[in-house]
Length: 116
Image 1 (cartoon, rainbow, N blue to C red):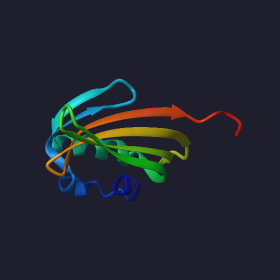
Image 2 (cartoon, rainbow, N blue to C red):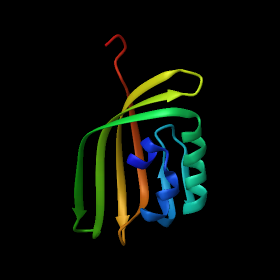
Image 3 (tube, one colour):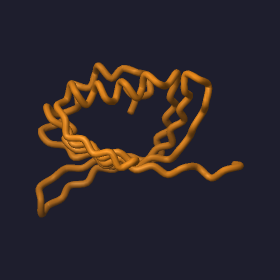
């Protein structure tokens, strides 16, 4: 999240596995090699002039029956587009970790109430 906020997605090889499955909140589903998914992420990030992320909580979970490790994050993201539009929403991501790298990202989004 910090690298998304700071536009440093080139650091992705540090924490993404060789292949990543990504379920975007819009319904888009991708299963790509790390370099390809980072290009997708970078294209999205390039449409923004700034990003502000406020993490509310994160939690590690271990599934004993499947021997899987997951990290859940809850955060508010405020995006400023290069054209000047500002958009904020709450997000919840679930990340499956294998061998210290993210292999699955499940992304959910909830819009903020209007007028507040």
